[in-house]
Length: 480
Ligand SMILES: [Fe+2]
Image (tube, rainbow, N blue to C red; front, top):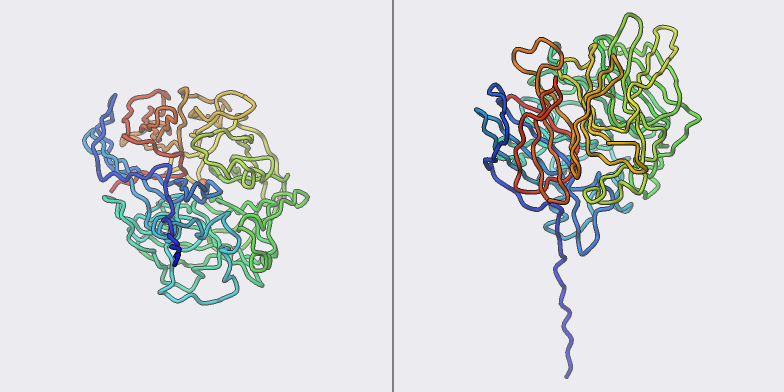
């Protein structure tokens, strides 16, 4: 009698970078400043493929951490995936059906939007692939949902979620992966967007050494905006609400990927909401032209004027365009344009002037970390080379916001990431220090750590990594 056997083939799973290196010394060409001691950790998504299908959106790649440790002019490199629910889904179940920014609607992020209590045991480790920070004396990886994910600074091993001990929501809300740290006040500030029948923008602070979020203010909003960052000054918090908005009910009723529920409504304009840091009161709401941005570069007060420097896009197409639905390692060409714009908001009149400080397309801006919220002069960004039909991100820029000029570092067939400024210990001027970043050479399938002298904007050292680090997002330098 004939019989048939059904054999289930194991899914074929791969990643654009799969290798994980334990702490490995890497060779330095050039000279690393002898004063440099600490660890630079960078986060970012790694595109994965299951049976020939990639995760759709670049932002939904699996979180991988990269650490460069500097000690007595020597450098070591370590990399490791975060062991998240998404990692398990991909590598243990051979599936791409994990929660994300733009993934499969039936696994919508807000499937349980209107449930009110998620037991402790169900707190999941999010695919925290955007940024890193120090919170409650621990290093954490950050995303825009769920709780921060703790990791070991030496081995990059995942240590579980940082579970806040407070009453603010932990799920069914959106947050920013760009909290602001205020060294003077010894606190971290961030916000939540609480989605529900009644929705709110809720700002909170976390005191150093604490894991409690203390509310600063709760602002009702009917149709929340998609925002990726916000600004602080000495006296104010500023929320820049772009006209990319969602009706919260749609998040629960429409089985669309999270970001696909948002609509671009330029007629609304972009509104700055200015909040007094001490009282939590809104002191100004002021509208300007419609634009979109991921990143505020910096903001500061000058008398009664608040200046906000922002990497502005003319619309929100960047976030929904096909570009981000591809593997950007092979095609790191932005089909979009940005400009650094300065919005100057006059209090109490609420009038806004704006001007362009830098016209070429650039992203991932950083400034001297001690000048967050204060008058500053220099911004550091990765950006395009020339005004080509498609933007080739092969350059690093030091933009002088005072003179509106820029210095450029560039290398062909190279794609630098976010440039991070580290001040030298005896710094006198704002740009006394170095800038470090990871540069990808896709054709050579290699990457290197690049170090520039920040003042002169010239290379002083590089250290080749024995693998190709995919284009990533944000990192921080920690004096551990
Ligand atoms: Fe960002």
